[in-house]
Length: 257
Length: 257
Image (cartoon, rainbow over all chains, first blue to last red; front, side):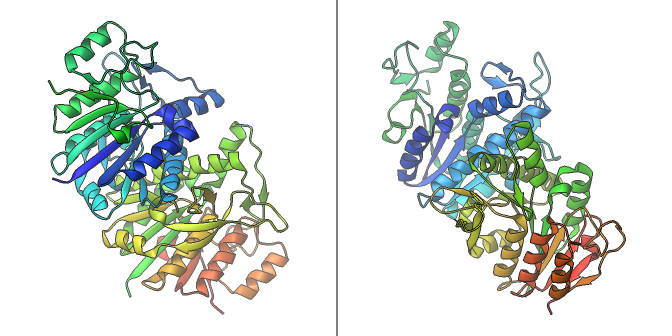
């Protein structure tokens, strides 16, 4: 099978032009098929603050009322997505910005209210791998913003880590998928105060321990939960890493066992 | 040659959910190849107001400083574009939202400063008809936001009327192009106070007269200038119309002579 590299780039990298440029330089150098999935949370929070809209998070996930959904759509599909697309085009990479609504790429269902009402948040139901494979076959580089749709005209906010994981899982039927979660730290830290304490590997049970002991921060939980989900459902390799190291394969590697 | 219908939908239609729904219903019923180009100026002005950013217009064209470019990117490529894409997908139309940066579709040059410094405004230099024809051939409906790029990583604000006209001109080598400028009025009015005074036809010299006598408003000038440009460069038909009438071919038809 051909190799497909999916790079998910997180909020703090997206808002720092220098880190983003480093990432795009290295992303451009990756050979073979590739997809970039981005977040943009911190920039959405900034815009919400300027507009006087309150930001509420639960375990690293954003509560999305109607106004927050508009902000997310503007920041993710507009500002961040097009900045990345223009940056890749400047590097002669034929990028195409997408949300789940474009080409009916990712259908989701508005999350049912159980304990928490997340608002306009979508749980992925269906990934249109046919359209993605057509694009990849044309040497197009999809740049995916973390928005999905319900097929009834409603856009939904979906965690970018989840989108990266689900794309990886669905496309693992057609490609050998490498999934890189790329953020501002060099990997998962054994000691959050010590940037050099990067774990070279992490198993699911070790993750559970770190989570219970409060060592892993809330923003990290979706990355790892989705990363282990990907590992257990067809993705060949999951690496938690930063813009300087991901293309070298350095960072925290998730273990299947 | 196959027929291609390009519908440009203006700001006030975009911000009114009911008008937009009417437009999308009728757009969906158009047979053959089609492209939707949208504006979003009034929504950009609203966001600028909320953020305390001053809006400056000259002859219906927006002066675009760095902050205004960010607002334009958020509103055009984000909010408006994805609202339309999700709305078309709900109507089983396989829409794909695009800016000029996506797929390197429209390259532009930052407008040189002569009398006025328009800021980050792009004059179209090159339209990538190959990618557009590939998409149309796959039954994809391009939904184009009024942003271009310079190929060096810079996004540029480009008038949506101009984009619609330029797409029409470039694609007229491959299709019989019908271009509909769709806004909140039924056409060009002989008397701006009388909504029923729609001109059924308009020639370029009549346009010049109406412009000189101040009867045509500033927002109308880019539509008509670009419409006549399209008529003189290969486009078969240009109609100025509204969401209720465009699909019936009613409105003000531009004359080539």
